[in-house]
Length: 369
Image (cartoon, rainbow, N blue to C red):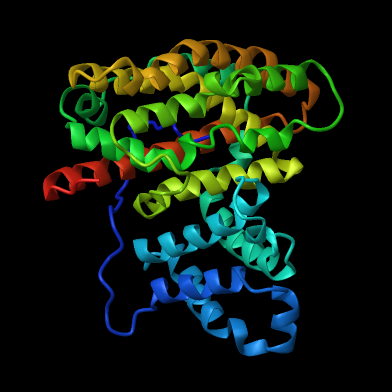
């Protein structure tokens, strides 16, 4: 889930891929080669017979990984890495598309590429945190204090931009970018719900069921998101605006794929989901303010209104009925809840800044979707 974006982050970000320079790796060509590999019949078997089949792609991937997480990093390397990782991760969910799209979903080669990317990328993400310090926290106090702050974050320049300045085309651009997640909302959360039942699991299912409209398609949150897009003349096909997504947004999505696919990260994921649900209403109010100022119809803002109402409950549920009980259940590992909370905030804020920058660039250049 990434439609909640916190715009308080202030690190350097970029809006688009830098121009190709002489001698620089051709990331676009390498991505097309990877897509070709994805569509091969019996990918693993073909690689076994023809070792050179992946050589060019792997050379570019090695270059990207060698630069993305160093001082020499560029946004093109980040974007290439996150796009490749997303292509693999989305095979974990069913999109009601061509069944042949999934013929290599259990490929050992794709698993190797994914693990190679994640090992380098996650080491870099974790370098932003002092893990030893987290292990000394009073977890319950840390979660409650963070929740109180993030429930009503301070007004920032980016929040003011959303409330007062974003244009109609900028608002359309916002919907297009975040539709990458908004149209399949909560899907990754479903990956953590299987297994033994207890009160915590039941609360998580309750949150998921509300996101899914309690099984009614007309009430599913992604249905409201699609209605907003249709009202503004945007294409509602999932992933239609994939090329608009900055690497920071893709990293946020891929991070949640990782945490939900690996049960060892269960506490980190729920810590992050706690932050996500707590901060949500404050961000949706900014979106609502923008839509109201632009004079849009109820259909063009219904998703935000629904989330403001429901996420106020979800944030309380996640803190009191999920995160704090998990801290009691896993006293030796409870610090991971706080780490997950802070990591989701950092990655989400970073994505938020990149999205705002992309919207402002589109407004300045007159790009119309």
